[in-house]
Image (cartoon, rainbow, N blue to C red; front, top):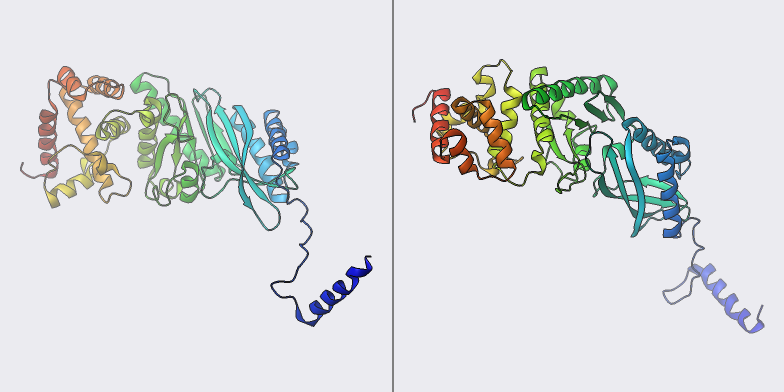
Length: 402
């Protein structure tokens, strides 16, 4: 020890014993905690090891990358999910550190993940997901963050039911999933038979509404009252992006069997016809057509299939125009009436020129053709003519005068 420094050290020690140090005193920093180092290169190697484990169906190797018991179980489950779902084009790539480090040395980095449901998706989905790393990047402590999209297959262990044309999966009880799978199978068969086109359907079932919003990266509460939604898996609207049906079991699970089948078939129409990626076409046609197909062979009275719009008309009078985009806002207090009104627009068209003409109109308009031109060619009507005929049908249904 340097003799000249000894008195200073003794005085500092005495001061600390006497009651602590002032703001100007020097305090040696604590030694760094093990695993607190942010090491992107090591994290990248760990992510590549996870990718290899999943690609080779090695759930044990995937689990060994976990920083604790919970992470080990989660990573092993992800690998098993990928195998059970038959996922292909699986890649994991470390992107960047996010700047978030916890007191125990765990830090976050974004990881780009791609995957595809073989035989169902035309292209791969791609999502950037927060991963938590520990032990200088050599272990994974967590997957996902509250403010980012989290695909269902990465959220934990899922059950899977599949047929030749459907895959239904989610972290829900097997008996519940079996019911959803039956409705999906019937929906795919019906849509394939009516529309005469390939019907390959993937249905994802998050455990609750909160998980649904997480899977879709949606604002809290946006889909609380919605039974199901058809949407791009990764939020992309690019042509060919994979589109799946997502159920809200909180709502869907309470539906009567007939209603559940109608909802599933409605969403299947959206998925099979590419409606979720369509950039043209009024929502009354998109939603009304899906209900037209879903209700086509359902034997229910108009009081059930159009009860809400009938009640609204009796209270407020006939609508002056076809349903607008804002009528289909998920927060609308008259959302059910809007769907029923749109269905009756399509029923009016089918009664005019037949179901084949309606299918032709739908395909043409979603493909970019002019609605007005297609109405005149296929039905001999302008939009004003259609509106007048629809209002007349509504008046009869509601028992009111025009």
